[in-house]
Amino acid sequence: MGGAAGVGPAFELVDVVEERGGSRVLDGVSVTLPAGGITAVMGPSGAGKTSLLRLLNRLDDPSSGEVRFLGRPVRDYPVRELRCAVGFVFQTPVMFPGTVADNLRRAVELSPSGAAAGAAAGWIERLLEAVELDGDYGARDADRLSGGEKQRVALARALATGPQVLLLDEPTSALDPEVAERLLATVSRLNAERGHTVVMVTHRLAEARQHSAFAVMLEAGRVVESGATTELFERPRQARTRAYLSSAG
Amino acid sequence: MTLGPGLTLLAQAGAGAGAGAGAGTPPVDVSWVELGLAAGLVLVAMGVSSWQRLGLTRGFAVGAVRAVVQLLGVGYVLVYLFAANRWWLVLLALLVMLAAATKTSTDRVKERRRTIVPIAGVAMLVGAGVTLAYVDAIVLRPGEWYDPRYLVPIFGMIAGNAMNGAALAAERLQSEMEARRGEVEAYLALGAAPARASAEPVRRALTAALIPSVNGLAVVGLVALPGMMTGQILAGSSPLLAVRYQIVVAFMLAGAVAITSAIVVLWYRRTFFTAAEQLVARGPG
Image (tube, rainbow over all chains, first blue to last red; front, side, top):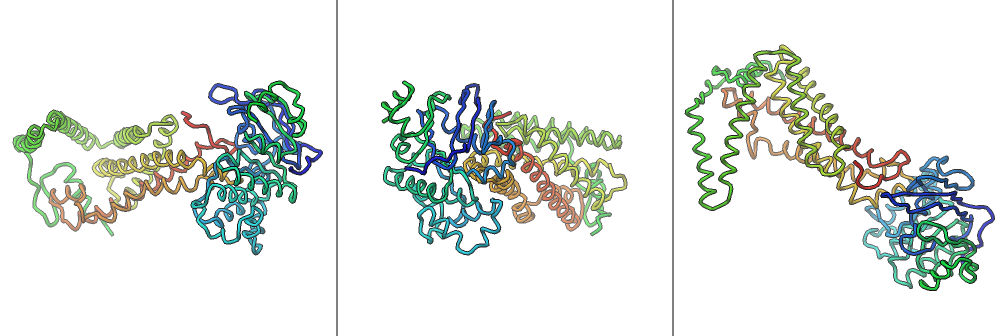
């Protein structure tokens, strides 16, 4: 189980609408995501899960409504600082050309404290250790790694900018169950040890149930239900949540 | 390197004057009858096409007629421009050439045409304009800065090459930004500026645009004698003088392509990002 959710919100979405190609992918979403814990965003395909996640570090902006991070509208933050503070791991990890160490170096150069971090001895090994990869991975060609290894490098790369939040967009969807479980165990440990807020999109209910403290159920661009994961799974208030949990579970 | 004597030669060759200078003999005149005899060579090509049933016979015929009409038309325009010798007429001709080059360079770009046309036009105006001004004012220095015998053929060469550079740069940047969309967005998500995020697509697009210039410099004179140099030699100019002109041309084409391609790539790159440093949705105008 992930660490307990903190008391203050990390993100607040207020009546958020996002239109794309003439249709609403998010339709009046209002939800609060707690700081300090792991939040799972669940729902069927096309529910708007990834669209919601992309708003949190401004890879996209909503058509209307407001997204707040630590009480301030995300638009009020310098966008590059926001993205360093709110790391994003994509569904399909994209490796930059070169070695794993090259990937980490490029990320750390982008962080506000990049020069200092890069000057500290052994920082690459420490980052790799944080995502449970041996230090000798630094010299390996990043593009020749397995899917699970690439996802760990992507996680390390996101950690390299010193984020307070990690956004994970279905990080295990391309991984076999055993590799997926090990990756999420790493995420849970990082959350417990470092106190990162984690927002994770997933369509695997078992993952959400085991690793998250808070859950949001989305359907057709709207929030159906949100709350403590245990409550949502054991005593769902909405019939559509019950239907989804029974069909997907 | 002074090119003073060569200016006279270029002027005479451009006007079709019979009197050459320097080491050569006067150029051989080509009468209408002799031009007709040259058409026999096109008939050979048409014969090969018919013999092998290539379906190109009509294409050769139409192409030959078009070539004659177009070149005669250009010839008469040039005769008029040279005779009028007015700066504004020369600049007007250069602008028409630039517009045609802009249209041709952007015809090959299928997407985002509304975005790329003004970018290519301005890039070629700056790239070709700066190069022409440099060559005109600093290298060649003709008696009148607007002398059409120099400006028109030189600008034609510059604009043609800048056009190819602009088209290659735009096409390649478009395809690289599409193919590397995930990589670019991964950089943005880490807090990278758009310039850093798109550095690799930009590098590849510029390389693609400049490779022909590099190759051109490497093989000039070895694989084929360039057209301008050949023309000067046929007009009776000393080969060594023609070579000096050709070197100037090779250098100015490299400069024009580099300036034009850099402007196209760096400006076009900006259109892939929003003010909030997000990738724009696919397929905007």
